[in-house]
Image (cartoon, rainbow, N blue to C red; front, side, top):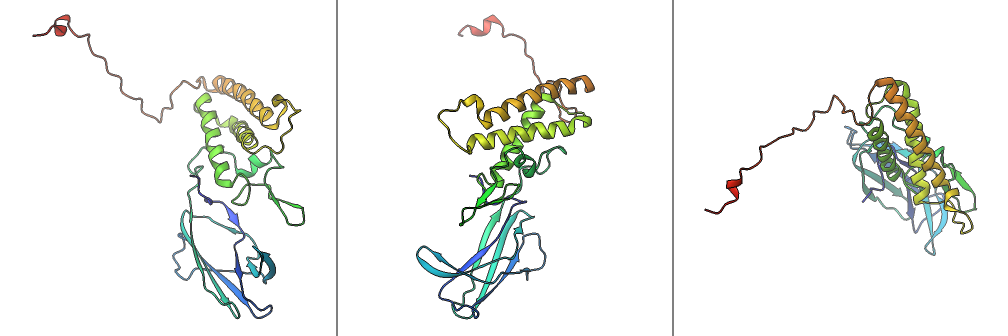
Length: 257
């Protein structure tokens, strides 16, 4: 199961209050990070509540003024304090998973780099029919930022399996190749549209994946020319597995005593 939030994700926390009184009911938010040594937490500015309907009931919704970014893995706590009519003090505990991209190659593409190849994907629909273009993936998009991180990690491994150790002069090309591959799988899993009259050879995902394959073939060839090594050349930093050899068993060993 892929967690809802990973390091690097951001979102706009909110809390619903009912009953309430406009102008009297107020809310504050304190955010506790696992990386924050201060147990008192960090005060997050909260926007004035907005009346809205949720599941057929009227509520007063408070949201943070801007998105909150989660920068550390572990258990976080949102501590709301609502005063006035409808006063409550809910605490929300949630887990932020480590990014699978941590410790990867320097040329590992970012979420925004992947999003640049499928710009219609990371959109958040608004109630009035408009869309908010995030230009990156996070916990509010489909797929989520955590899911895209997994696709990026897979694409990076796909590149290195073919090329072996990359020459530094090819890092930018490797970034593009892995980003296009990840974008292809984003679109394959979450197609923007489904047209039965359109050939699968013309779909966005098919074009992106084919482009990535062509780029990888050229990247591997260029890397071999620069380094004198190919994808089958072992990384010197990785110790080879031992290989053992034994003489054939004597024929008399098959006889029953």
